[in-house]
Structure formats: structure tokens, C-alpha cells
Amino acid sequence: MSEMTLFKGGVPSFLKNVELDDTTKSLMGAGGVSAKRISIKGNVFRMIAGGEEVAVNEDRAMNIVIVKAAAGVSRTYYEGMYVEGENATPVCWSADGVTPDMKSPSKQHANCAGCANNIKGSGQGESKACRYSRKMAVVLDGDVDGDVYQLTLPATSIFGKGEGDKLPLEAYVRFLAGHNVPVTAVVTEMRFDTKSPVPKLTFKAVRGLTEAEWESCRAQSETTAATDAILHTFSIKPKSGAGATMPAVAEPVRIAAKNAAKPAGAEPAVDMSALLDEWADE
Image (cartoon, rainbow, N blue to C red; front, side, top):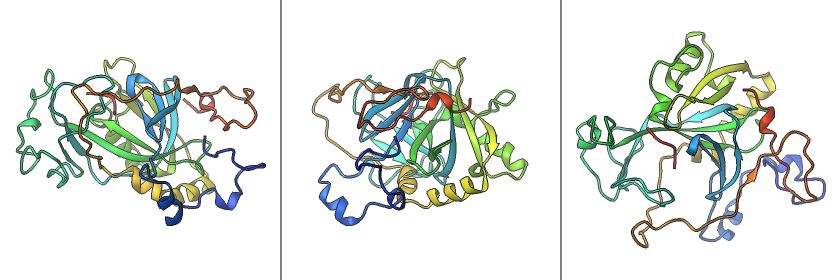
């Protein structure tokens, strides 16, 4: 997944981590560059590229290395009820969780703390209508020199105490910090909480990085892909009609098992099965 089969023998090693230049970007047209991300919709790890689901990993856990994170918890507010398949854009959001973004088409309040959508019970049940989230840039264990993915965590995966070694993000990072270990220096297992009615991840440390992996991950944190992954931005698009949905896409490929045969010319599959063990991100 991290390298496209383009040339016989693969892409030269010195080009694997080269940033796209302005000439390439200008010739790509209006579609531009679309970040790769990992979605947790439906309690399944989904690999998204170019806005389309390209692979799924139905294992309960996936190992990653966190290379960069947004400075703070962000917020998003959507009008109306969520409709499965609807390509909705929030009407108000905040990158820092303090004030609405200037690009929000319908700012709900001058600040997030005083907003009516920040009150418990303003959403479904006892939840808040305005959603918390945290964006991170991650790489896959075993492929730290490969693609950088955006991972957006919901509030249920960020806050709380956790149980045993199954911790929400903030508690997990505090645990590591208590041992003077940066979260960027370890392989982290993210695992679905099967007791939760909504997609929820817990985290634990698997092992420390090797020196070579550490240097690679530090370099990854400085890439444009990592910076783009933690930005909290939206493309404002007019709706074509109530309940408008995204066009259907081809069935995503299943992540191949280790050593599975690959068709000639196919992109090499990532061996996910070999990786150690309020809502989904849209």
C-alpha cells in the first residue's frame, strides 16, 4: 500500500519520501492531493485514499506509531440528524476548541464554552451536540517509512480513565509521560472496545522503537503529509438535495493475509494480520 507498482523493480529508494513538487500539484487538476486516513466507522479499521475506501482490516487491533498530533482538541457541529451515506459538512467547527473557525458557514456562538451546543443533553441522550475530536498523523508498525495516515478520534476514545492497560488516549499518554517516555517513541496498539455501543478505541504500548525507527518517525513528523493530517479543515460544498449521498464506489479490497499470492502488477498488500495486537469519524 505504501508503494505503487509503477516501474519494473519499484520506485527508486531515494524517491520514496520525496514531497510532491509544485509542478506535479499544478498538473493534478482540481482534485488535488487527498490525504490518506484510517477510519473507525462501524468498528472496523478502514483505509481511505482519495476519498474512497480502498482496504479494510477487520482485526480488533492495529499497531501504529503516532508521529504528530493537533495542538488541541477540536470541535464540530452538524445540523440535523446524521444520515448514513450523506456527505455532510459541519456548519460550525473549531480547530482549538475555544472559538469557531472563521470559515464556519454558521457560527453558533462567539466562543465554544458559552455555546448552547456545548451543554450536556443538547445532543442525543446526555451527549453534547457539538462533537469533540482529536486529529493525529500515524504510520503503521513495520512500515514506518511508508505512508502517513490521518487518524481522527472521537471523544469516547480521548477522555476517561480506562481499565487496566486499556486506556483512552489522554490517560495513555499521561501513563507514558509518567515514565518519561514520549508517545512518539513507542509502537502503540489501538484496539476496539467491544463493550462500547459506538466505535471506541483504547491504547497501550507494545514496545519501544529502535533507533532507526525513531529517526524515521522523526523525519515523518516533518513531512507535509503529517502536517496536513492534523489540520482541521473542511471543503464547503453546496448540497445537491436533502439526503444527497456520495456516489457508489467499488467494493474495497480486503487486506491480504501474510504471503498471499498477488496478481501481477498489483500493489503490494500490507500484512495487517501480522501487526501486533459518541461516533465514528466520518
